[in-house]
Image (cartoon, rainbow, N blue to C red; front, side):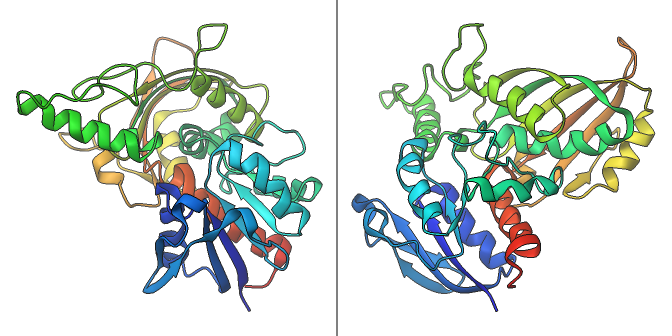
Length: 340
């Protein structure tokens, strides 16, 4: 017996990736509908070899459906997620709307699976920010061993995190650099992204940080431990898919780099590729289409007591969005719905 699944925002990058992963992981499905706004009505989507046409989100009846995977922005989520939830359909939301709501669990299944029991307060479960998701997968098993005091993280985030228009802008600007007269003005980003890096993701806040940086702080505290101090610098880089992070961790207790390497090798969702030789590490190009969060460059930080540095890479459309949502649905099935 399988589940009745709705994918909301099925025509976008994350929505399509959700369909791919549902198929790849053979998620038990009895029925599925794909929804979009009226401007995308009738667009074809694929689930394996099955072709489906999108239906109108505005008129869809969520009654009798088990899980709705939301891959739309906060404005649409604010309107339609409560409708789905009130109809008895459990919402797994990829937007930022509910992440900081104390009545909505924020879940990374490798880190805090027990928190999913809190879904019943609103019938909604939140998916974390892409940059947070891959980082906490690495932090949680280390925190369990040696208690993390402080994290300093610098991110190198791909343009797919912004959406299709950003992918197109990088592509067109890159071509324009080589073809005189075909230069493309920056529209999605504040400055050119081709052959450049931009230390600005989301809006600026009063303290000088950006909203993306604040998200990493707030979400890490909610998912792992409110006592962890986090400071982040989030940077957009000219990469199509795959987020990278340089993470410095200060622990309460000493932990040796060899033990860190061994703990991470044994932890769910992680693959360690850490050889001190040319190419003995993972780059974003190599993680595209993969499920794992890759960890490389593990080494002691001798400038502080109990410090470790590491390099963390993951496909942001997968672990940072669609994959984590499907993993939440799988966890929900095992612990709550118990059909599949």
